[in-house]
Image 1 (cartoon, rainbow, N blue to C red):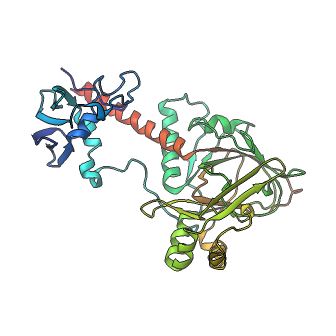
Image 2 (image 1 turned 180 degrees about the vertical axis):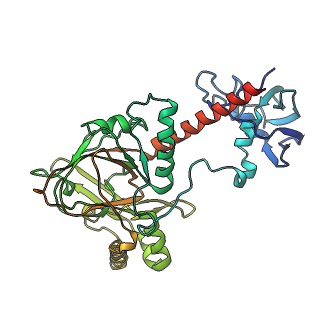
Image 3 (image 1 turned 180 degrees about the horizontal axis):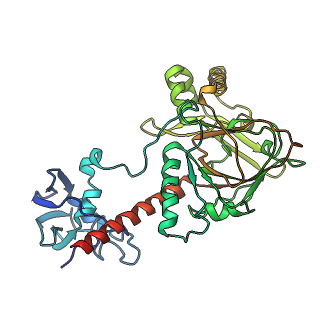
Length: 408
């Protein structure tokens, strides 16, 4: 025999082995070589088996319908087999299934606090602490094959910084029109919006956005007018010889945390009152209602929707209106405080990627006739970054498994 497959496409290193198992009808307990004890319910084990009655072997997608098992799946026998796998006999099916110890360890829901984080933890920052974007030399990226180790050497730290700090800057990329697409698609699919698949940020006649002028832009996120605002924005510098036009970035999550600490009533208001966001251009009419600071069920920060020039007339209840505007002005004053702002200049060949649902970006005014400033942009989704990061981690685990196999 050999170790069983896992009910996914991942490879799971065996850093600790199973040394003991005891069971009751509806759960079992295993002891690991490092002393950790993990409990697994019988129903969880049955649903996460990898045999062809549970998952489609071609797709690794679950086909089991638990409700069609005649009775609650229970454990008749449990042991550690000669390959180190967990072997379980289930009733009422009278079916023996085996479980990979690496998979069990990685999905030890009984010891969630002991599991390594799936993604890099969030690192909140002020401009006083992070004076420039985390920067990575990406000169070799254009020549790297997709899926190659050379690509991974650049992408892994890129995505790590992006997921943790919300932004990253790649330097020394080709200054070619459309090169942004080739770089962005190494992460994931580009999201097309009313600004197109790619968009050019430079002063033009008859603009449909303030971004396409030379005026200063206040701190904002893009497209809060959408039910699901784009998760990521990429800006790629092709030319920049103008006077002024410094880029400004702020960590919206850090600002929200400071607001909660320093002005808790304003924070409470901005996390509950729904604002109207509207983009009523010549050709589109997007409207969405949302709190300005969006929280998850546990009170964690999910996104900010801060963009004064994209707020429509407020439609909150009459009794909430003055309180809402007081909270808004408190936030607006904080956005002008120098402590939050990071300022930097784009150089040709720079590509800055940032979390559009977390970071606020802005721009100082520039002299339109002092030179040329041309950025190309596109949008991606947070899901694409998380998926690509997990794929890189999966490849790393597969390499560890391969190395371990070769040394046996």
